[in-house]
Length: 108
Image (tube, rainbow, N blue to C red; front, side, top):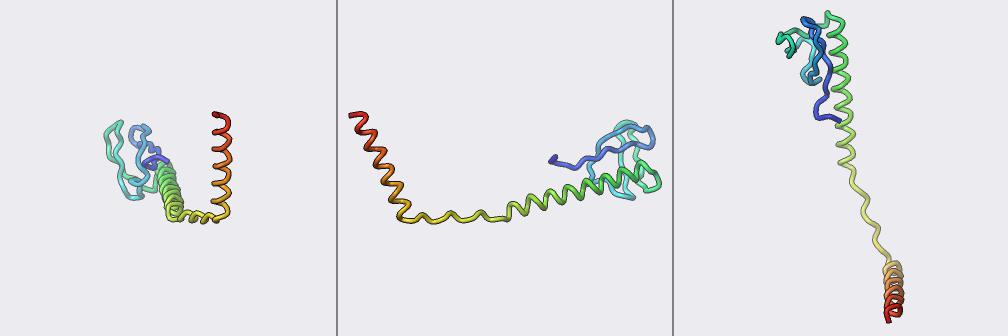
């Protein structure tokens, strides 16, 4: 996931393509074309602008969903570790002592 949800925008003046943050693309808003340096309105009358606004809405929705998924994963607490039974601890110590005895007899 990128830091920003980007949407491709086509300038109605020069037909140049550029990327703009979906957060900034709203109906009735304005966008600035870096190619022809013109400010143009984002109105619903133009079909390409309408498609761009729909893509921006979808990108914002997907980003909100992804952030909600990440936050839900953070809020889940891990299960506490199972307490060890004394018999398990003693069995592990016995195994360790057997391995240490085997090493001592191998060196000696």
